[in-house]
Image (cartoon, rainbow, N blue to C red):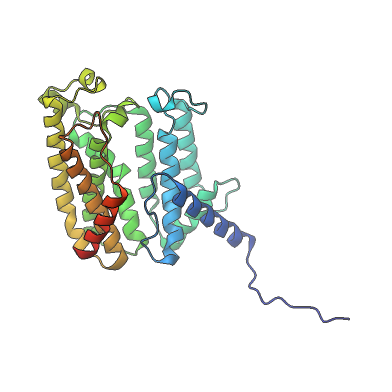
Length: 307
């Protein structure tokens, strides 16, 4: 009888195979998404699956709150528009899966990967629940009374991402986390001022109501896309205080090394460049949306390397 052949390939448990497949699916999602640049590429190779799992969790949840928003211009004619109640139910289910024990049957592939990342890197679950609370808030809250309300939203919608990035790199120093909060808050605010016209399509206004009253900018004027002197002065005020927040966070880039420093420096430069582009539009973000092009990114990458 012929001798039995013996395989020397390492045996992989079904659970390990499932986790590996889940990470691969998260990577495909991260690299394919239209807002992605360049997710998980400025990190060591062994860390990329963890970054992609965190990104996939946040991206998917954000889409539940945003994409094809019922009543928005973007959603007109769409067949898959979800109601407010359906969005909240979907986000509640997303949180249920987040808080379920690893290995629970029926988990979305994102959670198969994310639970492993949370376990392996000992990440606090509160950062993920904070993100979900902000996404849920986006479904139901369309106006903000004052700047502290906006900052509270940023604390939950943006700051957890910066803290997670640091934790993925093993950085647990609270001083670094507080500096990252400033950069992430600045980035979220820059996105708000960049997207005023876009957010109006979803009936969302992040410009604080008390500031709008101070400058004499009514909701009627916003929905009419009237970029008059009052609106431009209001945006100029928001841009200046957002730059101050970015400036408070900039020392973080001097306290880091290697690829992490490059990633954070690029983030800081990208956010502040958006502010400069808003200024170049003379603060008319009702009728135009400043954005970073390929030439901008090349320049920012050079600046990040040399500054």
